[in-house]
Every structure is written in structure tokens, then in C-alpha cells.
Image (cartoon, rainbow, N blue to C red; front, side, top):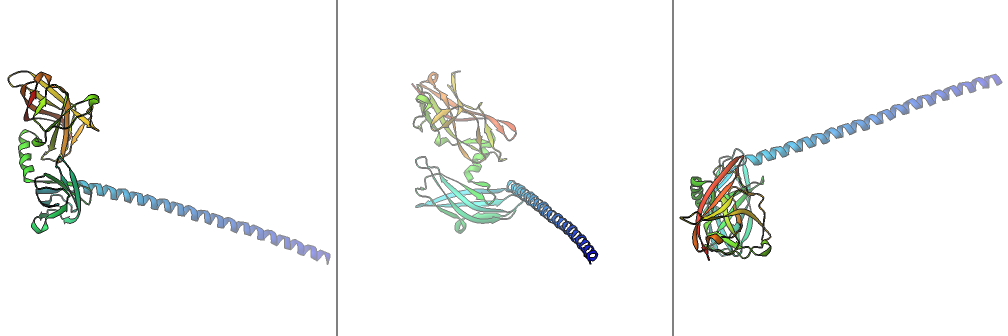
Length: 324
């Protein structure tokens, strides 16, 4: 009886040992499976994130390519004013190879005493080669407080891709053709102004006159517009200046191009003339004392780069009388 009990106990211990061994193996297998599942999920998640990033980069690159390939031209601009309503007529031409959508128009009143601007949302779709005449019933009307029929307006469209399309009037084309005879830059004659420079290089009130004092340091303010037919931007460098010379003599003075910040005359860095954008350019930091009591021929000598090449132009534009 004792021997049988001893044998049974030995068998039971053997069975328990085998059960523990099997449990350990099964547990290890489950652990390995869990690790593999987690690792697989991490790898799959990493692949999906990488694919999303690659797709986002490709989409952004395609957007940039489409934006650069967009070429909408707005011509024949004309404005009429009734009360505070400004009516804009123009012709839109999609000269590019991809479709374009016009989503906004900005209208800027350049009146010197109270400049103001406004905008209006639009939804104009243009397929490649489309021409849309915005006249009569299709014209655009915006509300601009204080607008007057004698004011000068500047406008531009904005496309869904973020490009701006300046409105070019018939006058712009005439100026562009004239500019090509002497260069790509034109000047706005009626808005010529000068400032007397006070202590601390502070500019005094602007003066819209063609007689300048011969006893004060002065700064000239001149609106220039880049009308290059190739629509390239022009970067003016520090070599640009205004040059005054007394007819029949070698007496002259020059005013280098400069920058004005917070009504203070500061050292010139660079100036970009964007295509079609009217830009106020300053020349100054000189006194015409040696020109007093004389009329002087005035030239703007412009030098810089257009695209990747050098650019130079001489604008013989006005005559000034230098008082004593």
C-alpha cells in the first residue's frame, strides 16, 4: 500500500512539471506574437505617415507649379464714380495653359489728401484662352467712401492660387510703348514732390512744387512704375541717383537714391520695382547751394538688375528752378 502511494505521488509530480513547462512555452509564444503585432503596427503607421508626408509635399509642389504657370491679363481698365460707388470695367484674358479662378478685386483711391482702398469678393472662372469682358451689366461695382470722379484709381485682381493681376488701362499701354523707347520705367509727373530735411534727418512737409530752395538739404519723392513688357521685376541699387545740371555750364549736383523710414532719411539698402506696381522712390541728402537762382535740367539715373542681367536707364523728366 505504501509502495503504491509512493509511485502515484511520483507520477503526479511528473505531470505537474510537464504542465508548468507547457504553460511557459505557450506564454512565451503569446508574448512573441504580441511583440510582432505591436512592431508590425508601428512599421505600418510609420509607412502611412511617410506616405502622407510625401503626398502633401507632392501636392504643395504641384500647387506652386500651377501658381507659377497661371497667367491672367487684365486690360482696358476704366473707372466711373457715382456717389460712393466705383464702377470698374476691364477685359480678362487667360493667357496661361491652366484654368484660373478670380476670387477678389481690390480698388485703391490714390487721392493724395486721403488715400483709401476696398475690396470685393468675386467668382470668375477662366479656362485657358478664355476672354471675359467685364463691361456694362458684367462690370464690377465696389463701395468706396469718399471716392470722386476726379481721383485716380489703381486696381488688381487676386486669383484662388494667390497671384495678383494688375488692371492695365489703355493709358498704361501707351506709357509702356513710350517707356520701351527709353527703358522699362515710367514716372508719374504730377506727383513729383520734395521735402526739406531738418535736424536728425527728419523730413518736413511734402511740397508739390517745381521750385526748390537753394539753401536747404532736400529729398525728392518720385513715383516710378515698372512697365517692362516681359513683366520682370527691377531691382535698383545704390548707384541710382537724381542729377541736376545748369544748361550751358558744367555746374551740377546729384542726389543719391535713399530710403525713408518713419519720416526719417536712412541709408539706402535696395529697392525692388515690382512689375505694374507704382512705387514711391526717394532721392536725397544734398543741398543745391551751387545751383541757386538757376533753372536746372533734371535726370533720373537708374541702375540695377532686371531678372539676372544688369539694367540702366536715364529718365530726363522735368526742369526745376533753384531759388536763392
